[in-house]
Image 1 (cartoon, rainbow, N blue to C red):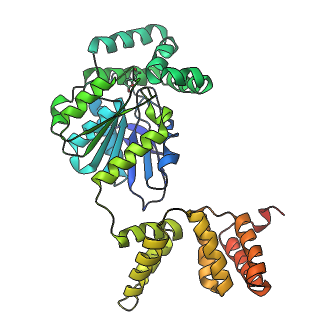
Image 2 (image 1 turned 30 degrees about the horizontal axis):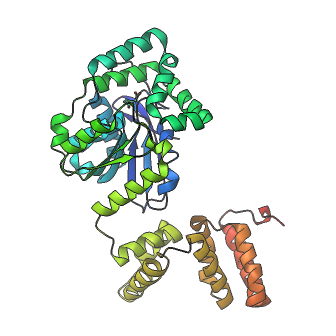
Image 3 (image 1 turned 90 degrees about the horizontal axis):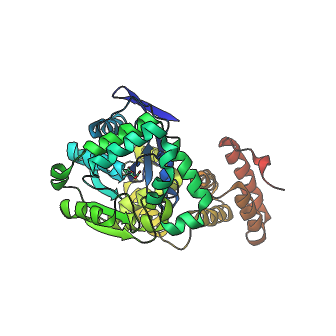
Length: 394
Ligand SMILES: O=C(O)CC1=CCC(=O)O1
């Protein structure tokens, strides 16, 4: 678990995925913590790494007394990005997280390369509604409003079919500290980003669920019309949390949008990305540091040819290519490369049992001596990696 002391509060955050991949930063909605992105992340994990955090008054972050200003939340996220030395990120905000995202993009434009605004607006009113909600929670607690909130969060069919899951999300909401929840209600009530969001320069995608009862499609459309050049999309069969209800469809929109606004990678850049994802940063950094004019053309050739062309192709997964490569290195007696590709299984997902079967298979087609040497090298390599070789099935 990681936290940073920012603006006098501890902010809990989580960074997932290999560092060579482009970064998506997420900011959560009212009454949710960073787990709200759990259903979405597996859909995007091959293309991105992720920074998630709990805003003040939510999740594991500290909870100062209410009320908060939107600027408190904005400054927390700016502090987090600065402390982690991150800039030019793609920032994805959900509901009040989308207000925070717009605020960060306006206040520190260099930090934000692209904006993804889910079920949010430049102003989420009316103020009287937030005052009523604050008074109701002060009088009766969060449980009292839970059913009404679930109706805004989730489409009718989801509520009917996924009763157990809805109960868990409701638990997350009602377990939010009351001070954190109403502190953030006050921040939403007082926020009006009309002027600053009209001046945003980042490519922006605005997404909304067709059954969103908190920030309905027309409201989100008005924000998309305000932000210069913003793209607007409606997701079918989703309420206020499409990352929970429609993670595949939302991931597809995010991928399409980022592909549209991102310069395509050169063959070399693509190769470097895949090479790092398979062999690991430490290995590639070492190879780069040892590179001289003598082997520079060869390094470019393998980066572009092997990694940027063949390993980058679809159809076979990295795990498939990993096992094929291990079989070939073993059959051809390339011991050093065999050990390197066994170490790479930590990144490709090929398991010890699968490598063992591959080397057994090798004995039939390449001969027992090749298999025998390869099994010895595999045992030495796994031991060097700190992996217990006796843990596999018999
Ligand atoms: O709780 C709701 O009604 C939904 C919501 C409004 C702002 C936010 O972040 O969530």
